[in-house]
Image 1 (tube, rainbow, N blue to C red):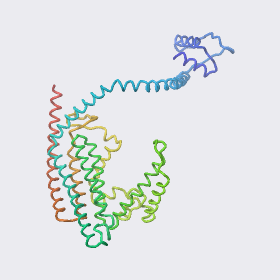
Image 2 (image 1 turned 180 degrees about the vertical axis):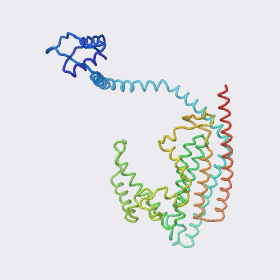
Image 3 (image 1 turned 135 degrees about the horizontal axis):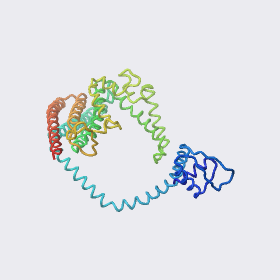
Image 4 (image 1 turned 135 degrees about the vertical axis):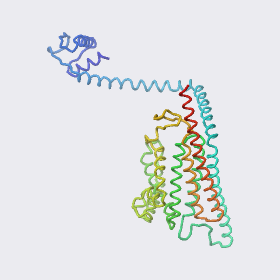
Length: 413
């Protein structure tokens, strides 16, 4: 390699050396220890005095490295592609054993977690069940009302989307259904020790809660505009997909479908104005802002105090450095750790957040159908929520104590 670099140095000065000559120059350079020297080489042209600087050597080295990379890179890629399937086939048994061992370890951790956190997680699961049951009961009652009114008067409908609040019923029902599903996902994640995943899903639950409360408080045609805003989101997604479908390796959106999407978009913009095209443009009129944000929605319904927790949940969704490291109670004080699997600490807050958000979104369901049964349901959920918060904090403190004791014992050993 050094002979080749010497050749590149002399080539930059217009002198062609053979490999043998390059080796002679290299030997003389090393022997000279930085001083000038005379060397007879059989090269064409008159005698020359050649000065070799550090930059000459550095540039020649860089040039040779680029040439070497261009030569080696295809060989490496070819070798990897050839060896990869062989390694995969030979390691299938080891992989199966490793997966089985990982599952066994994870299950042991989760079993211990469920034992510790059962009083809180069971109450949270109960809240999800109660909220879901309230939705199902309301839908059944509504269906019976529709059938009854249809028999009495074929011209009347039993829905709540007539009059001055078009879309409110459909919007709240759909939001509540998704909220129940999201809360159930949170229970599953917490039961497995995935706190960050639970916080990420609570972020979605919080957004659903804020939107539902905003729709219920504002009333009027806000729910209809919220539902029709789907046309804006579909248009944006279709255009973005159309831009990158080739790189993604998928087919383009059919022209007829794109025209339909564009027509729907043009219709809602014509109905509600240019500000409707923004993310929360459906709330622009009520908030008196051309480009409202989610924070504006929170402010309008007095949920701004949730902002710190919402921001923390955003951190675990995005590639924020704040979400990369944790300081477990059983770790060395002042030391941050990387956690790659289930974890039994930090469940209290996502449990409590989920319970509170679920109660709020269920209260929105009651707002569109304020029966005595629904009011009682919210009161029962509130009482369970109070128990849950107290239990969750107690468990968190106990888990912390046990972790610190375990850490102290390990250091003593």
